[in-house]
Length: 433
Image (cartoon, rainbow, N blue to C red; front, side, top):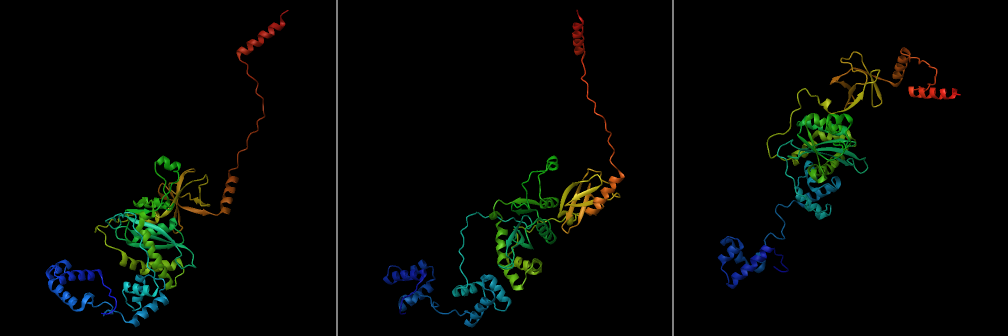
């Protein structure tokens, strides 16, 4: 073989050992032991080395095309389709999309083709600097929850938030799109998780004010010896869900890494389907996209026991995922909440007295309930005009009492017996001759 030879380290070692065999320093049996080859294979390699020299040690397939190589026409077609439709996609996702079109190719093969054409860049793998926490063994024992703010509808679209929940044991995910990471959006997402799987034992969240609060407790909370909670925290307390605060994004790394999967695959899926609204995005999430992610990336838990619990019998989740505030009943049995006045009906039993405390509950669908001693009261909303007219009529029926005007009389200084004696003494002195 003319020209320079490219030899691997294994081939160079064979050359060195066969050189010792040729010089008589070791036997062919000893050479087979040193090289880890069978005696017959070592003998064939040595015979080829004696006949062809160093070229006899080079692998016969080097420089030749593989028998399993894809036709060049197919390769050009795949790369051209990638440039037309899937520019910027990763090799794995692009291979999945191409397979849906009938162009089946392994993702690693596609990666090599794209790298050779300069259509894909190698990513530097970061070194690990934190110790990994072991997964919880049971499904539903710990669920990580976080919001991912991103321009989901492309660079020209507005930024919105994907509320993402990921089970720690399995990596199973559930996503819900909203405008912002609000209490209402997080309640709706947790409600959807409970409908699908049950009540998880604990949630692993960050320290956003949606989940936890560092505010000072109110007087009522101090008297009851309870810590202040957000509306989301109160809902979790009703269901027995523990909220665990993460001290860093890396602590809840499963949901953080899962954000990257959504930001890669879901953005491209929205662009392919031409979705431009949050409602369309949620429809795509619910119609199979999340199921496909779980089928590909979720893993079985270490324990077959399911840690999810059933919703307690008789408990309506609409009464759990709501906003509750305490208000005082005014003297005319009117309760004010969010600048709206509600007239409590006389037919209620028990009827709260003026200055009594009631709970105003606002549901996620906008319904308002007024509770007194755990019982819903009948009420009627009052417009500002009706409220003013009602209070004006009450003033006419019960006019204020006229106050009596009492003439001012200056108080005379009272004299003590001692003062009276002193006065009499001075009077007698003046009458003396």
